[in-house]
Picture 1 (tube, rainbow, N blue to C red):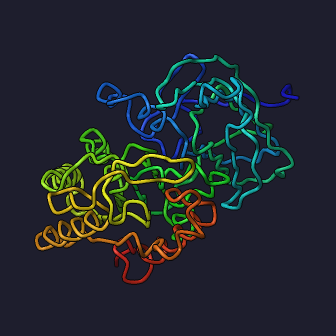
Picture 2 (cartoon, helix red, strand yellow):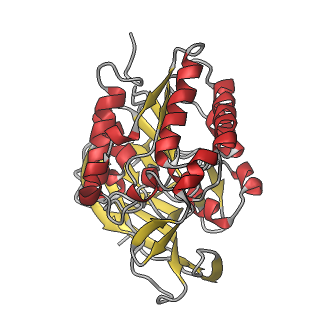
Length: 387
């Protein structure tokens, strides 16, 4: 099957790893990371590493006339330890040819990280690399992007093609860096192109870098420094759901922490258009503080609404505070703006588009992506291209 294919260098060659902040060498091959390696020493828990190495928005880009392309890959899949030790789901790869999807390939399960009832790592089952193949692509020059599974870690072991591979031509598109939570990482999307920042980027004609970190959007300083040091033409930050659900801040501490996060980003991007986006609808914590827990399949807030007067956070409070902070900063910073997340997905749409009261279903992600493209990148939007 592979005898006629030529091996392509994984590094220092024609492949551009778009959407990754760093590429590191591993025992298996190379690993695209969505946060740089230096940040690992500052992670509060192992879940941050699982999200920083998940492939949401990451793709391999090159130009070739090959009609057949193969990748050897090693995935690492998290799963609950009480389930079978070898799951059959590691997401999908998705290829585009000249910007058009030519289909998905089921990602093979490689390594398995076992999680306990508190989502802490409690075991590891080693796996082996497997091959993903695309053929029948036509022996004509074309721009290829291979999008990695958006919710699992993927190490690239080898890439082969039946014709020479060249570096991709510059796209000429603006680079959009987005940071958010699981609602931006989009684990529930059906394929890599179903991730809402990818949907929005393709609709708006920009190149995405998706720093959506499932369960880990807490205004961490190492994330701010990573954004500060990453080239970007426009930046958006979708903030609020994680630290509200975990009751990680009070009103007294939220404002200074948001200001500090924004100050760090502005150290590296003093004039870059910057859009702060508040949470989409989440009925459980709209007016009741966290922390939240799952009762059956229902997200439930366990805080006391009476505690809001003393500084507890709800989504209503967070949206108001983010709007206030952006308004204050905009007096000296004409390139910062605010977008209410309820314009992306509103409370009266929650029953239809929130799969379990928190995360959007695939149709919900498409709705958010289409609305964000219009509101942020369309006429009058904060991230629209300027003359």
